[in-house]
Image 1 (cartoon, rainbow, N blue to C red):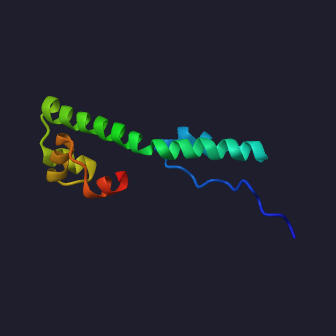
Image 2 (cartoon, rainbow, N blue to C red):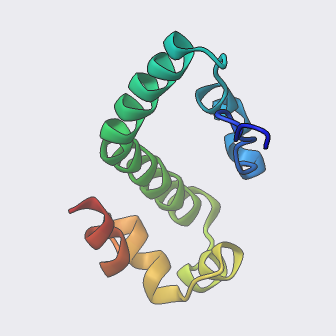
Length: 104
């Protein structure tokens, strides 16, 4: 019976995150596996900070679209795939209940 693979092919990342694929690859050695486990642990710990930075950048972009481009929240929401109220909430920096649960 063949030994199981210790380094299975990782699930594909969404296109937006392809630059992070290096986090999922490692050499099939004890040292490589440990280095990967350490990098991935650190990445997981930093996800809340990443979410905050992304949310802040999205808020600023939506504010600028509203103020500079003159689009309504209804128009912005349609582009983002959300309703006008949610687009307005994003501009005000309010997080959705699902986002708040993830951050806890």
